[in-house]
Length: 77
Image (cartoon, rainbow, N blue to C red):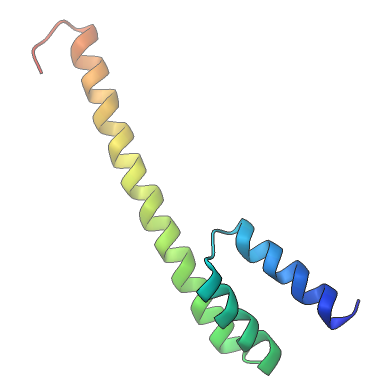
């Protein structure tokens, strides 16, 4: 696989992982320079950000579940 194809595949995978254009550019620079530590640091930061978003959504779902339960039990909210 040539470098251009590998770069395109990396970019596609990063987009699928929710990375924005600036982060993708930074990651590709690290990749081209062989900076594995830098790549891993940036990917871990992105992972933490996504996980925070998941937790926020979980809390919102829990609030909705509570409201549904209250309504079904005919209790005032």
